[in-house]
Length: 101
Figure (spheres, rainbow, N blue to C red):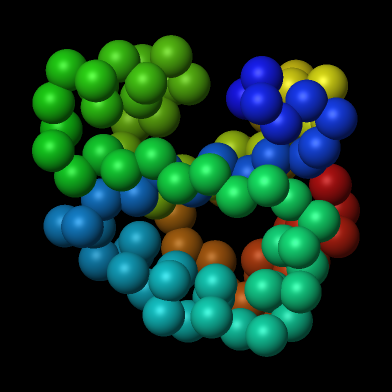
Protein backbone atom coordinates (compact mmCIF):
# COMPACT_ATOMS: atom_id res chain seq x y z
CA UNK A 1 0.00 0.00 0.00
CA UNK A 2 2.87 2.36 0.80
CA UNK A 3 4.23 1.92 -2.74
CA UNK A 4 0.96 3.18 -4.22
CA UNK A 5 0.43 6.32 -2.13
CA UNK A 6 -1.44 8.86 -4.21
CA UNK A 7 -3.29 6.21 -6.23
CA UNK A 8 -6.57 4.40 -5.65
CA UNK A 9 -6.07 0.69 -4.93
CA UNK A 10 -8.36 -2.31 -5.40
CA UNK A 11 -7.39 -5.45 -3.50
CA UNK A 12 -8.88 -8.74 -4.70
CA UNK A 13 -8.76 -11.60 -2.20
CA UNK A 14 -9.10 -14.89 -4.10
CA UNK A 15 -8.26 -18.60 -3.93
CA UNK A 16 -7.83 -21.23 -6.62
CA UNK A 17 -10.47 -23.41 -4.94
CA UNK A 18 -13.04 -20.57 -4.88
CA UNK A 19 -15.69 -21.04 -7.59
CA UNK A 20 -17.07 -17.50 -7.18
CA UNK A 21 -13.51 -16.15 -7.62
CA UNK A 22 -13.17 -18.00 -10.91
CA UNK A 23 -16.56 -16.69 -11.98
CA UNK A 24 -15.42 -13.11 -11.21
CA UNK A 25 -12.32 -13.65 -13.37
CA UNK A 26 -14.21 -15.23 -16.26
CA UNK A 27 -17.38 -13.15 -16.33
CA UNK A 28 -16.74 -9.84 -14.59
CA UNK A 29 -13.06 -8.89 -14.77
CA UNK A 30 -12.82 -10.01 -18.42
CA UNK A 31 -15.56 -7.55 -19.47
CA UNK A 32 -14.05 -4.70 -21.53
CA UNK A 33 -16.05 -1.98 -19.73
CA UNK A 34 -14.92 -3.35 -16.35
CA UNK A 35 -11.29 -3.49 -17.52
CA UNK A 36 -11.52 0.12 -18.62
CA UNK A 37 -13.09 1.23 -15.33
CA UNK A 38 -10.41 -0.62 -13.34
CA UNK A 39 -7.71 1.40 -15.14
CA UNK A 40 -8.32 4.02 -12.46
CA UNK A 41 -7.01 1.63 -9.79
CA UNK A 42 -3.78 -0.10 -8.89
CA UNK A 43 -4.83 -3.74 -8.82
CA UNK A 44 -3.50 -6.03 -6.09
CA UNK A 45 -4.44 -9.68 -5.81
CA UNK A 46 -4.04 -11.58 -2.53
CA UNK A 47 -3.88 -15.37 -2.96
CA UNK A 48 -5.56 -17.17 -0.06
CA UNK A 49 -5.34 -20.60 -1.73
CA UNK A 50 -2.87 -22.10 0.75
CA UNK A 51 -4.90 -21.04 3.80
CA UNK A 52 -1.58 -20.89 5.62
CA UNK A 53 -0.50 -18.64 8.48
CA UNK A 54 0.22 -15.69 6.16
CA UNK A 55 -3.16 -16.03 4.44
CA UNK A 56 -4.96 -16.23 7.78
CA UNK A 57 -3.02 -13.21 9.10
CA UNK A 58 -3.92 -10.91 6.20
CA UNK A 59 -7.52 -12.18 6.22
CA UNK A 60 -7.72 -11.38 9.91
CA UNK A 61 -6.13 -7.95 9.45
CA UNK A 62 -8.85 -6.96 6.97
CA UNK A 63 -11.69 -9.00 8.54
CA UNK A 64 -12.02 -11.24 5.49
CA UNK A 65 -13.86 -14.48 6.26
CA UNK A 66 -13.18 -16.00 2.86
CA UNK A 67 -12.86 -15.18 -0.79
CA UNK A 68 -13.96 -13.56 -2.92
CA UNK A 69 -13.60 -10.21 -1.24
CA UNK A 70 -12.65 -6.96 -2.91
CA UNK A 71 -11.50 -3.99 -0.87
CA UNK A 72 -10.95 -0.43 -2.05
CA UNK A 73 -8.47 2.13 -0.73
CA UNK A 74 -8.37 5.84 -1.51
CA UNK A 75 -5.35 7.84 -2.66
CA UNK A 76 -4.22 8.22 0.96
CA UNK A 77 -4.24 4.48 1.58
CA UNK A 78 -7.40 4.65 3.68
CA UNK A 79 -9.81 1.77 3.29
CA UNK A 80 -13.24 2.71 1.96
CA UNK A 81 -15.18 0.15 4.02
CA UNK A 82 -18.50 1.10 2.49
CA UNK A 83 -17.11 0.01 -0.89
CA UNK A 84 -16.19 -3.56 0.15
CA UNK A 85 -17.51 -6.29 -2.11
CA UNK A 86 -18.07 -9.77 -0.71
CA UNK A 87 -19.05 -12.48 -3.18
CA UNK A 88 -19.74 -12.49 -6.90
CA UNK A 89 -20.94 -9.44 -8.85
CA UNK A 90 -21.93 -9.39 -12.51
CA UNK A 91 -20.08 -6.93 -14.75
CA UNK A 92 -23.07 -4.56 -14.68
CA UNK A 93 -23.27 -4.72 -10.87
CA UNK A 94 -19.51 -4.23 -10.58
CA UNK A 95 -19.55 -1.18 -12.88
CA UNK A 96 -22.43 0.35 -10.95
CA UNK A 97 -20.50 -0.28 -7.71
CA UNK A 98 -17.34 1.38 -9.07
CA UNK A 99 -19.40 4.37 -10.16
CA UNK A 100 -20.69 4.82 -6.62
CA UNK A 101 -17.24 4.91 -4.97
